[in-house]
Image (cartoon, rainbow, N blue to C red):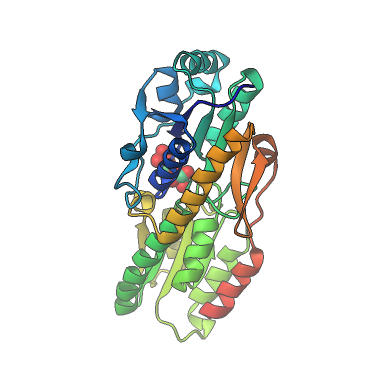
Length: 326
Ligand code: F6P
């Protein structure tokens, strides 16, 4: 493959705070290395429908502090078809793009891996999702900011829960993963954390609610991951209410609050490291790989290996949360 002259960059899947910092690092590193840059808007949808924009160093001024993504994002079923990817390939060739940086989650990397198997334009991925559910990296862009959003929200809820001696079920995002719930719960001192990766926490929750539990605390904050087997905060609250008639219960679903906001310093720094590394990887003729951060070191892992592995949550932290919140 000849020397890369022009790269495309896109954001794909659910947006995450810090994506703009990653776009900025990709564009600035590319320009620094004499490359041209095409921004691909609306994720893979824009690649299929040629929603392209020329980018230069000034295109990414004043965005490092902004949540969301200046390139917009979308989920794109068409890119999961061979015809869709062939159209995208033709569009990339026509635009003179000979390498792509895709910032997104594992759904985006599934499409990118298939593309790389079918066509000779290399892709390098940057893990961007608040869920932190991607294998091959300790860290995904947006996760730290989302955790801080959860902590600020739960700190506020704790004031009113305490005032009314209430039980609050606070539902957080994370799709099928419990990282936001586990780390958000630990950081906010939640009395219970319910995640898809474990099954015994509902029984533990009942123990601390029982009037004879001997607990001195008069209010409880239970963080529930949206993918938890209980069915989420509403379902769980109804179940508890049916068992404990006189308990005062409320529910807060944090929803898309967790996807917005100005990215934290951690997200900005890591996004900058990853954006730089992605362009360097393309210049080193890498393809079909994802940039990771493992023990705070930049790593490369193939899309296929990242997608095959299962990310294991740290169960010891669940134990720690129980001990510290007792
Ligand atoms: O993957 C990120 C995420 O925020 C998940 O945590 C959540 O379940 C999903 O996206 C929500 O998707 P949408 O923004 O399409 O409603």
